Amino acid sequence: MLILSSIALAVFAISPASASITCLKVGAAATARWTNAADQNCTWTGIVGSNFGIDPVNMGNYACNGRCGADCTGAALGNVYTQDCFSHDICSFFNNAAGGASDPNCGGAFDAAVDDTAFGFAYGCSQTNPTNPVVAPTIMPACG
Ligand SMILES: *[C@@H]1O[C@H](CO)[C@@H](O)[C@H](O)[C@H]1NC(C)=O
Image (tube, rainbow, N blue to C red; front, side, top):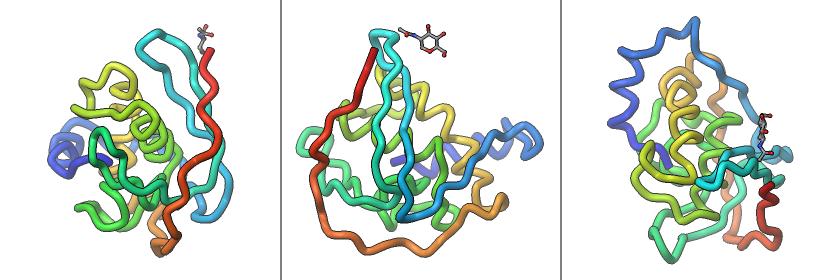
């Protein structure tokens, strides 16, 4: 759900050498992690590339979870799937996030995903987008 406008900033602010990027495999399980507004550590485990459909609150399209960029087709450098982009997507869906870095629950996860969005393609994290049907998650994140 990152927006391309933040990429341009990141390209100037972060060099690849200082980037922290972990590629994820589409179809594999991964654990999203973030710190919420109450300073709790939250986790949620699910499938990279899963499709939650439209968030009825923020109207975001949560297809291709873990892709750096909105849904499966939003502006991005390649179709990059990373740990930080997965964590941000999952946080964003469950918290109906809005405002990117300023979101009280997911702003930290957003910040962590900026370098992934800028340099994930160069790191070799780009893959073919899956075409998964919409399946709403049945488990909630664990926060504590
Ligand atoms: C969250 O995780 C951090 C880093 O592992 C830890 O220092 C902190 O105490 C944890 N917070 C809670 C509320 O458990």
